[in-house]
Length: 281
Image (cartoon, rainbow, N blue to C red):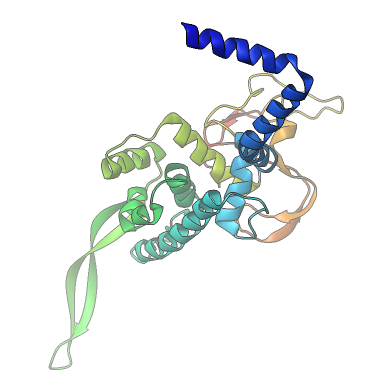
């Protein structure tokens, strides 16, 4: 018990002296300054979960220079994700080569899920193969008629069986496939983050948790008679207004006379007749 008492007495003596207090203060600043700088970086560059998604997603999906002052470890995470996306692109191209009838993969969706699961993980590229892409498709065997020419020059029709990749529309099935592949269930936070990243990349705005937007249960009618299709709080969901913008469906730059509101699949909407968002592109 004597040692703690001596420590307390010494501490009281130091703090009672102004010069000693200043000396202790500078020592603490020297010790804590790396931590303070790191916290300041994350607070300014990646303020909040949504802003973190926006900044990092832009860097990973679209490239560009990493902000000055970014910790080397974080720079490595971004580069590893970029390298993984290159591998995913190659795997998706292989799978889409087995698709028919205009079917295709949503490359942003595939990458958004991968980002949510593996950003900051050890060696994410090890998971960026066809096995991961296969979680987004199912394979079917189909039969087709093939016409060949025999040795005598006669046309002969034969039937052959081939495999077709079909994209999965039920996203819960995709998560189940990922669970079977990895042996681990994606957390609700990871699933919500994947949805958020997807909307940030596609629309430039995060929509938060799947199926829930604050204010959707509160009707909104403006003074000019405008009725919000998604209730109160619609202003924070506007991704483009009147004029020219990149069409979220075709990717073309074109003008429009309305507003784009980014909301996730399943969001209730108000219109001339009641409806529900059935697909988010």
